[in-house]
Length: 502
Image 1 (cartoon, rainbow, N blue to C red):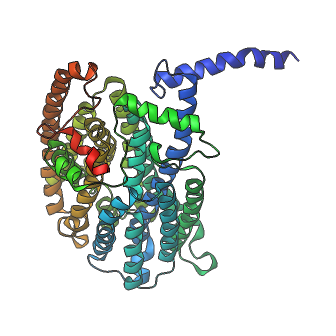
Image 2: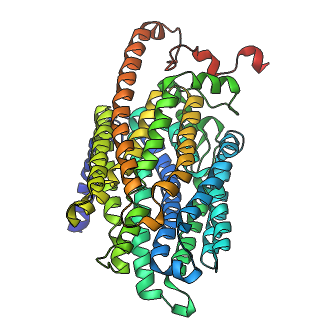
Image 3: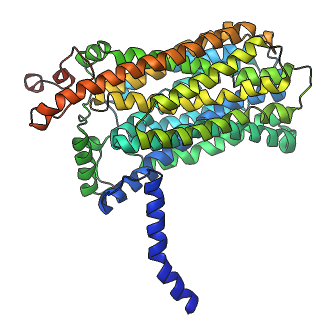
């Protein structure tokens, strides 16, 4: 009885301590009402749970190709030369071919049904990779994998940006983004386990078991998506987990932030308006640099280990690249906590860019101790962390314009992948392993450019904020509830005029 009484007495205190801890970590805003806190908690369980699992499974499956390549697949199905890069090129070409139609589809059809359906199709294509016997069959599987992933990343980013307030965004974006390096880490460990314990089981090679395991992980994610993943706030119906009152509160939160409601389709006037402002060009270019800089710590590192004269074991080849992913997770969490607390997106971005540039310089020098090369490959994980900071920064700059946010984030992802599809074929030719001289020099140049571009974006962002302060007076007087980041364009172009609506 005494023990039960103590539990009852301490329960309210434990809840209070938990609440203070979450507010201290900036998970909930200080002073948030109980009703709003329940809403945010539900959004976390629905949006983040599905979004993180979806990204985790896709990164897991994508990384599985490299892990399988270095642990038996190359020999079993007769891959030669630059085939691994060509396989990635097919994947990204398919991904890009369907990107623009898929992005427009997100504004016309229910996201809550599109994303889980694509998740199932992705799982089926992954399962197909386990049974390929030649390069042509693998090309087919990679093509359809690219097609089914087109809406995943952009769709989840879009929904996250549609439901959360600015000071809630960075932490959630960080949690979503770390699921990618976590998937890469787990893929390495899974391949090690599959190669060690399942290789030859039921006559199936270890690398094939990896794709089978990935398939089994994907399907529960799709079920979660069908069950509770929402549409945009102004296009979501009441359900078993979200009441009409909570939907009303969600839309009210967006109005308080000055965020425009999402229109059914993106019009050409909106696209023209976005292309007249600096955010599209700067953030798209920054994302292109990010895609190139984060690459050399992944597949090239695995190829370096496999081709090294130190004769690393299959387990080491799969496990060592996961260190960079662990660094990415740690830097993402710390950097996002700092940026949410201070509102500073520039600091973490600049630090990550400098660290990555230093690693690429070491690899260009090349004649250094093995430990220094490992540091260079490991520190590339800092680039993976930068995806969170860049997306959060872009969302901050155009927070008041849903159409601009959708166009910019989709363009960042799409155009970045355009270059990722073909550049590594020339910069990181598989046959050049372990020393990718052209690739390392290219990475050094893009790394230094990333440092300079981060500084330029900061200058433009400070200028934007200064202009916003000048507009605060008429806004507070009730003149307008929106802020324009496009200096020469009227914000009213972002929504249809009354005549157009008629």
